[in-house]
Image (cartoon, rainbow over all chains, first blue to last red):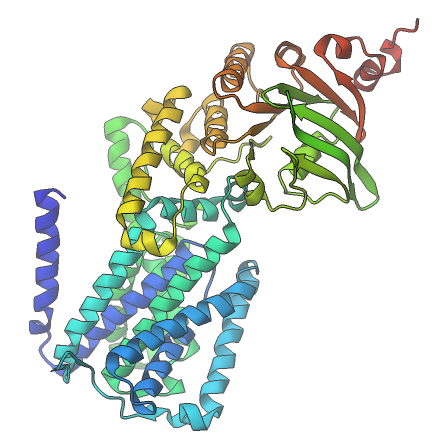
Length: 329
Length: 259
C-alpha cells in the first residue's frame, strides 16, 4: 500500500474515532450510531439489489430477526453479548439459505413480492407468538454489551463497537466486490446466460451473495437491539425496507460506496424533514420520484460519469470505472 | 484418433415441431468439424443441446465416453465444452480484461468466505489468473485495449474477445456459432487463421456453425450437413461439395444434376 493511501486511511479512521466528540447530546449520538447501523443495512441491500438485481423488501425483516434473536439469547437464555451477537449472525445465515433458495429463482417483481410476503409472515409471528417474542409489546430489558470486562453503557461508548462492526463489514463487502468473484457477480447481473455458459453456477452464486447480505443485516439487528435495549414488531415496519432501497438508489445502486453516501444523506434528510411536520411524507415521496427519474444511478453514478467525461477529454475513450445497475438497461 | 464427442440419436421437439430428429454424429479429437445447412436446419439447437441450454427429448451426448446429457450449462463448461454465441454475448460494460477474468473463474477455487477475507491462496490465484488472462489477450492482440469497455470495441475485435473468453476456460472442445458472421473477407481470413492456431497450438477440437462456404471448405476436416432437423450428409469437404442432397437442400431441386 502506498504512503498516501495509508495516510488517507489513517485520516479517515482518525476522524471516525473522534466523531462522538462532535455530537453535542445523546440524541445526536443516537443518530450517529443509527447512521452506521443503516450503513451496514444499506450495504447488505446493495449486495442483493445493486449487485444481483433482486429488489428486496425483506432486509429489515432479517434485521428484525437478528434483533429478536440477540434479545432472546441475552434475556431469556442468559447468553453473553458475544454469543448473542454470533447467534444473530447464524440466524441470518439460516434465513439466507432457507428464504433465498426458493425465492431467488423468482424473477423481478415476483421476487419483490416474495420478500414482502416474508415480511408479513414474520410480522405476524412477532405479534402473535407472545410466549417467545413478547407479542406487540416485544422484549424489554436487553442488557448493554459487556465485552472482555468492558461495559458499553452509553451510546457514546457503544459507538465504538458499532464502528468496529461497520468497518469489518465494509472490509468484507469491499473485498468481495473488488475481487474476481465480484466481477463475476457483476457479469452475472449483466448477462446471466453468458455467465452460465462460462461455467458460473449462477443459482449458487446468487444464493451465496444473498446469504452474506442476510448475515450482515441480522448482525446489524443485534447491534440495534443492545443499543436501544428494547425490540418490538413496531420498530421494524415495511417502510423501513423502502427507506433502505431509497438509500441504495440515492447513493448509487451497484456501486461500492453507494450505500455509504445513501445512508448518511437519508438519515440527515429524515432529521430535517421532521421540521416540515405533516408535509414530510409529501416531500419524501416527491424526492424519491425525482431521484428515480433524474438520477437513477445515484450520486456515485453521477460521480463516475463525471470522472469518465474527464478521462474522455484526456484519452478520447469512454471509460466508466464502475457501473451500477441502471446502466445495464 | 479417438471419438471425443459422440452424439447419438439426439431428438428435440418444440411443441409439434421436430427441431432435431435422430441426429447421430461423432467428432474426433483435435479435428475441426463444421456443421452446415440452411437456416432453421437445427444447427444452433444442436449446439444448445450439447452445451446444456436445452435438454434433449431422446438420445445421448458422450464426452470422452461420459454422458453429459442433462448437465446444466455451467456443468458442461466445467466438463470441457465452451461456446461462442451467434449474437455476441459479451459483458458490454466490463473491460476486455474483466470479461476474460470472469471467463477464467471456473478454473479457480474461490470460496466466497475466503474471498472476503483475502487469504494468501486467493491472492495467489488472482495473480495467476491475471497472468493467464494476459497471455490470452496477447494471443488475440487485445492487450493494448484491455481497459476498454467491451461495448466500445469494433465488431471484429468483439468477436475475438468472445473467442478469447471461450478459451480462457481451457476447453477440450470449442463450439463457434457463426464466427465470421458480418465479417469482410479480410476479417474472415484473420478469423480462420486464429481458428487454425487454436486447433494446432492449443490442441483444441473445434466445431463450427458456418454459412461462409469458403471458410467451411477450407478449414474443415469433416463436415456435417443438417436440413430440417435431420442429418443429410457427412464427409470430407470434397465429398460434400458434390453431394446431390446437399445441393438440393441449399439451392433447390433445379440445381441438382441428374446423371
